[in-house]
Image 1 (cartoon, rainbow, N blue to C red):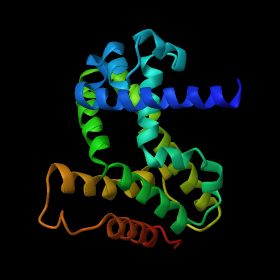
Image 2 (image 1 turned 90 degrees about the vertical axis):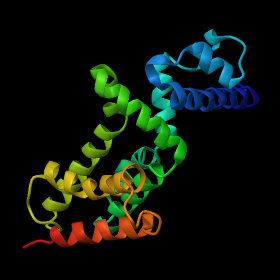
Image 3 (image 1 turned 90 degrees about the horizontal axis):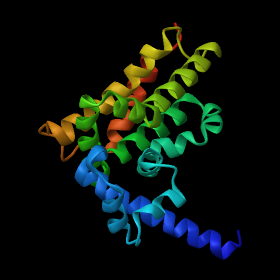
Length: 205
């Protein structure tokens, strides 16, 4: 494909992703139709979507990955594996909090999570795109640090949950059940605190 055609292809593909994000955020996954997405993307025929994506699930995956900074970070997971704990975990924490502080992303995830509770197949799809990848990487990374003697020995799956738990609590107490300091507690402070508390608890004994 000539460079100009490649650029046009990628531009159109991104238009569809942006349109799909608006539709998914408004209607959710199940109720969103290709016609809705085509209209939002400004393309003439819903059938054109299949020229750029295999199906609605493939498009949904691209929308989620495009909005989740942490998933973009995991596209370079082997480089992340080589970083020292404080740097690797700080990057993961900030990328997660940045994603979940984006109003469009929050609207999308609220709607999709509600659907996922009613539709196990959608829950499985969402897990494979996002949470499953994050936890799988964290478990692998933490297990490696334990092997190197840089962290105390314990179940890496449990340790991964202990790391992510405070970050999830920050989102819940900032956006869904706002606490009195929701406006003043910054993402940077939360990420730095979560990483420091976790690493102190994981120090070898």
